[in-house]
Length: 222
Image (cartoon, rainbow, N blue to C red):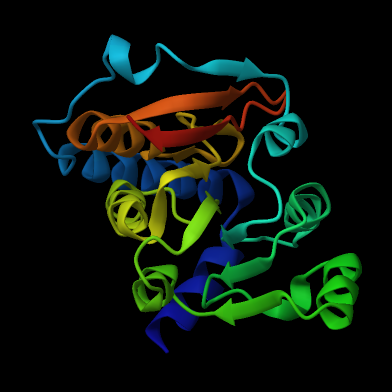
């Protein structure tokens, strides 16, 4: 109730005032998150990148990942890249784990059509941190993460997936970047991924230089 009233008041303010409030709010949130990052984070070392291959886009990365395997896409947006995963990887089992606050109705028609006509796609709409814990250890051949951007969420997803992905499997992800400055949003994915790799002896196998600068990566246990 209070939030609705505040939102109405905010919308009545002049645009210039709203812009200043928005900017100050974003700066305050980002500064708070920065202060609350762990102080003992590790940076990547030579061993974490010595076998890394640079790729030009995500579809090329899909050509390098195992096909006819067990795959999960975590955080799907409208599902366009999920369709690419299915078409390129031809998975035996394909799990689509969407965020609990995203409606499956927002998925593209091509994904809905694909899921309706095959029997190896399974959809979940729930917190990925809850769903992933229900899978057996060493279950996935590879996974692709595109869900949380804050440090703690990414860290916890990676910690769970190191048990759920097979020893020689891949943990892949998106948005390995500082943030989306158009929306004044600061990500903490780089810090979480780098720290995870050093602490758990994972290495970058592929790094994707997409032109939209939302870089992707593929990790594997050393």
